[in-house]
Image (cartoon, rainbow, N blue to C red; front, side):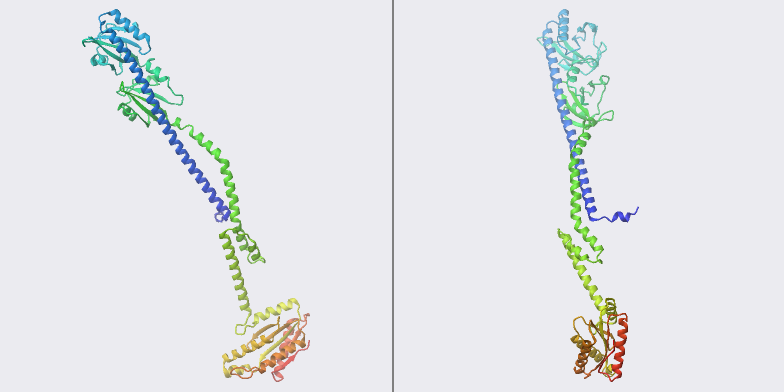
Length: 522
């Protein structure tokens, strides 16, 4: 591949290339910025939604717990005078268990840690004495309590909501407790699953020790998940939202809120990938919507590049053929409608004009004898060739200064040059329009009189001879010239033959005594 050709970009392609690159970079930057903004908004909105969701469910859970504690408080008040009445205890346990779905089971425990009544009857725990520290939490607390999870005497993994029973004078008689079976259907599951989202979101609840007491994956209930920054924050009583990576290495957007009544924490979270899943489709839709305008913009850029570059392209093309006829006319016709093109056009025209003037001057200098301003030998040759090619008849007058060598020897070359200059001036004064005056060498000169017969040419020669003879020359005094005249009629004989005949006539004039004109016959 010829890389040098690739580098020779014209202005139109360069403008188009730069414009397209600029548009693409701008679009890419816009898409990237839009993507980042939309991504940040989705994450922010998802975090805010999860925080609000967790706060709402924490509030709902708190209300459920309060309602359960109120039920237990009412039952405890009823039983303060009936702790020795087995039938009354059983009836109240059944009523509390069956009238709502708040509890999976209800037990009444005496101050001696013996279970006095239980519902449902299938528990088979009546008469058992509680002995494990977890089972004795409510007995030891002697206040309304939501216990930590523990395994009940019947083998269920539960947490208990209890209320103490006191006599009217404040003697502690035991407590009544409603149990929530954490690994079975329970009031918490009923409340929390009712609000479950279908967008990948899920929630879980931990107790004050960081143990899961509710999770959509039931097998995880009872698992301790401390060490999670979200869990630490919510158990510290804070409401908020954070981005975290869960135990499975999945990035999650989590909102959390505390359940103040029980010291629990509710966490609502959604995988970040699910939150951002629709973003690619959204950006594709944005791209498809912007594509028509983008193509229209690129077309407008292409047309603008063509319009802007056209004057410069025309100037460049014309500059390549400056040596051809009509080049300056073509450049002058170019419509340079903006400042830079106009200045460049003006500069090219000015430069071309100066160049032509310089070439013309060089041509003139190369064909002109500097001391006299007459045509030199080269100019003479070109003039003869032009007349020969055109076939124009011409009279030729050959002349030189008489005894010029003596002038140089006696007065010096400077005086001789002055004499030659004076002769040139006199020749110019006698020449007609269209006549060509040449210095063929030293003191020798030639006049070419196109379209002139011998008689008029002879008059010119004689007039010049008399004027020179009558013109004083500084230092030298008097100066004379001898002239030879011949004519070429434009025939096949050739102008060179006529020049030779004029030279021969000059020699005859010199031989005849100088200061005279001799004519060569046609």
